[in-house]
Amino acid sequence: MRRFACLAAVVSWFAMTAIGAAQPNPAAANADTDFALQGEYIGSVRNPWGEYDPVGLQVVALSNGKFDAVAYRGGLPGAGWNLRTKTKLSGEVRADSLALFGQECNFLVANRVAISLDATGRLAKIDRVSPTMGLAPPRGAVVLFGGGSADQLSGAKLTSDGLLQAGVLTKMPVDAFRLHLEFRTPYMPAARGQARGNSGVYIQQRYELQILDSFGLEGVENECGGLYRQTRPALNMCLPPLVWQTYDIWFTPPVFAADGKTKLANARITALHNGVAIHVHREITAKTGGGKQEGPEPLPINLQDHGNPVTFRNIWMVPGAGDASYGSPGRGIEFVNVQDRTPSLRWSRAR
Image 1 (spheres, rainbow, N blue to C red):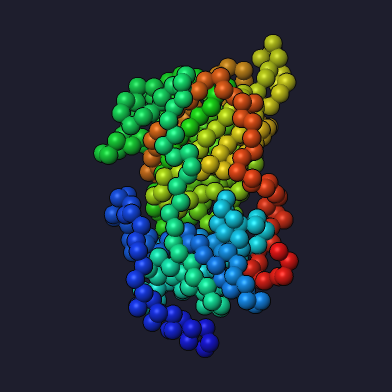
Image 2: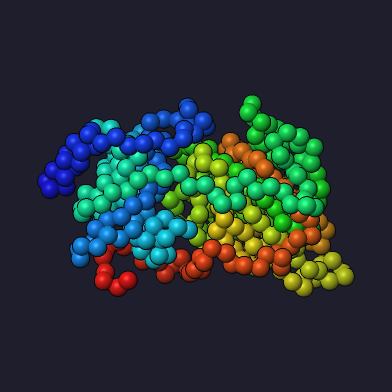
């Protein structure tokens, strides 16, 4: 009863509070009413000792007013989360507000604000932008797609607003390179797993860096940022669907002996997802998923079509700038075993 009394009180508070809106997302014009509630929230919640601790919240739409969410102590992934403490929530829309309940914390979400139902606390919705968004190609780069010509690509199809659709190959085969691309996953709230915004950057048609709407998920090997079915990203940096995201990739192919069959060294990759290092000088031990067999010959990059309307823009490559040319792990991100993260928001005096 106490939970629902708090809920009623906060609904009344929302009715009296005006919240400023962010710039509208044109791609969301045809989205359902749940889309406005989905997204990222950041703020602070008072702990039992009277101190305010930063908390991040990711809210994921599941269609028909149903939602999952994850609360992170310290802030959002890549922006303060302590990489250990998080808790899952779920809920549904009631009286134009979303009530989210979990074992350790509860929130009411409406009008771009999430209010704690357990303690004094208020989180505001934010719209994060990758620090490498719009990065201009440096000298020596090959522009694969800049929003106009797609002459460097085979099988290219554009949307009515000039975005590149998934399902293309680079005309040039690739060896070592640095690649920048921007992608956007679709809003598919009723879909689940690999059917939700699926594509991928298939390097040499052998090694896939997965693209998927993995917003609010665990971040495993077959989700966004994973080397498909082989290595999970150090951190799930996936942003909400219909938000533009970035991959910055440095790749060095494997080394083969003169016989063309004996592999002497694995391929290596460094990848930033939305500006945060998720793989650093990582060895790719074999082809991923359904990729072509490894070999010494260079092959094109495939932006995989998995039947979902993933779109791309601002794609450029610097040939020859392989994995060794990336020299910093970046952004102070701590690389941890995901299995060691404890899913709890219980308060502790340990700071």
